[in-house]
Image 1: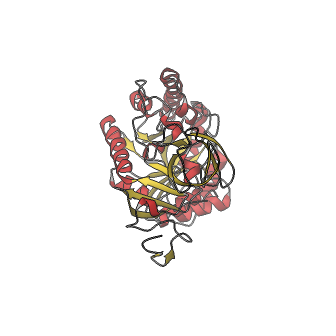
Image 2: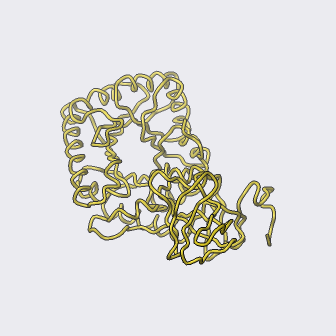
Image 3: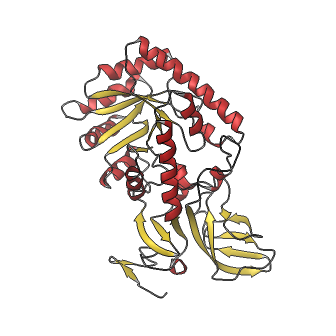
Amino acid sequence: MDGPTEWNGLEIGYDVPAAPGMAEAEIVTPALCLDLDALERNLAAMQARADAAGLTLRPHAKTHRSADVGRLQVAAGAVGLCCQTLSEAEALARGGLTDLLVTNEVRGPRRAARAARLAQRIRLGVCVDDTAGVAELAAAGLGTDAVLDVYVEIEVGNLRCGVPPGAPAAAPAEAVAAAPGLRLAGLQAYHGKAQHIRDPAERRAAIDAAAGAVRETLAALEAAGLPCPVVGGAGTGSWPYEAAAGLWTELQCGSYAFMDADYAAVPDETGAGPAFEHALFVLAEVMSVPAPGRAVCDAGLKALAMDSGPPRIMDREGLAWRGASDEHGILDDPGETLAVGDRLRLIPGHCDPTCNLHDWYVGLRDGRVEALWPVTARGKGF
């Protein structure tokens, strides 16, 4: 390898895959890479769309788990970030993010105590879907100056967490409003299953049904004399429909920043292709050509999540992904175009779990490494 063998006291190829200033060809593979120009365009485009719709943008950090990417999103105009776990929020807070919403229930006394501690340092929101969860959060904050923003999560078609919409949602909302140290911040109304519905009309119908649930719940809260400053939700695949509904106030899109192969297969609301660019890829190297028409690269199941299908091979016509094992990706190469040492850019099928497989992002611009960022909250699922 030409160039430095160490960077900031870390050994290239042992502690880190690359260092700023290196050429792309020098990166140790497999490596999680970012096209920084595409990333910046994606961030600006989504922020502009939210601004044009008159909505705030709180991007979901479960996509990237990166304090560095999160700071870029806030600098572009985001009000803060979403997280999916409390440990993810704790890690991003250590990375300098100061306005975080855990779009998930935070249950149990130990987690509630952690939330109360974190809320003394940053603005923190969490979700509830029953009154017992409210009691846990309130008890954890007693005797502290912590103030938690609490959102009542309602079921809008996701069939996951969430209290039924309408009158049932008023009970936890009333409990929050009455509890010391808790502030009723609004509703969480995210329809995750709608994000990947391929047909735009079916996707619109799913969000129309979710809007009905939100409308019914807002009426119940109003009847109970309860405020609802924020209605949060929406994702990369559905946000135009939530924006058009006139009920949601905050968008929580995440994958737009990177765009994986599965999201790229979801037509936008007009039926056209995706509105954002691929900014994330796993750089892999051909390690073997064991037989005519078959090549093997060094990115397998430990480098790429396969739950949403195999990766897409960028800019190499005629190649097909045959399968993967832990450390190997098997490629069909009928034209016998690949040789040992060739580099491939692989667009993951699902960016979120792919990012969680790596320690570092290698940021590229004009063919050279510009930045090396840790995956700040890697493994923070607790």
